[in-house]
Length: 360
Image (cartoon, rainbow, N blue to C red; front, side, top):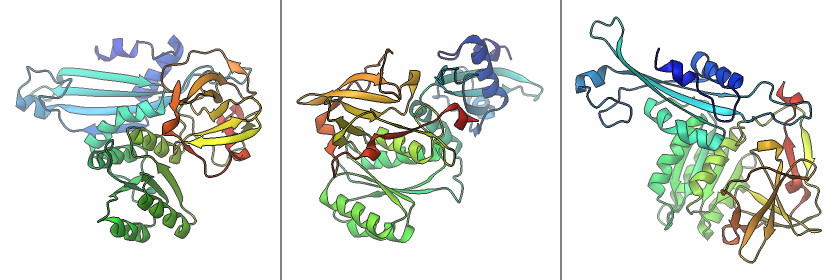
């Protein structure tokens, strides 16, 4: 495999040489996801344009994916030594006419240190493979209303791909004046374990409130119908699947550290997924950092007349961490946030943080 040798010898993101080699071994030798893919078309990237249609039909393709972590993952000070990473490789081979070998072989691989980016990476391949969702998968219902920023038909297609990646059964409903009663009836009969509503109209609020009142064992997530809806839904599905944005599984039964923001809780804002809590003594707004890159547990923001502006990443003690901050998430427009239904409560200031003990 002359193609794989140089590929598997390359470094993986910020991992050192030893951990990079281990990551490639895990991806190639023991992937957690294996997808059998249909033969490519002449328009697909990776297919040799000189191949005939007959040759394209004979190509065999497989996609492998896995998530790995550095070893050791935690240092003596109980700080992460590096990020967990997700890898995807798509391998294609053209058998010889007599079936004795392969006349062509090529492979493309990509790595990501974000569960959000990794899910985006593998979504189209899961859809192409047509993987069946388990019959007993968790059932999620999404109700979306059209807006100038949201094409509900495309949103429904995207959300199905997102759900397939995390093994969930997802049903989409479009809420309009003519479908209101049909949506209400469908939710009543299907009784999903979780409802996501995308929109803020009075009709949508009624749908969500009625569902929450009738289905006491189910939960509801409310998102705005705008340009951020897709990404917020993706993060919500990852959260429901029990995976943080840094690939760490949320503990289900293990004992975890409950780290509290060292603040006096004041006002509270949210955007449907993230909660920003004011510290009455400093005026800073705190939120949980689920990525945990570089030991960051919290992020703090300064409130201006128009936005929340990133101020610092902080550890579990609330101390500032000197680390690089990307442009993404440096400012949160106040127009994208809504006040919480009540003043910030201590529960907003608690965050479950995995420790080496819960990783064993």
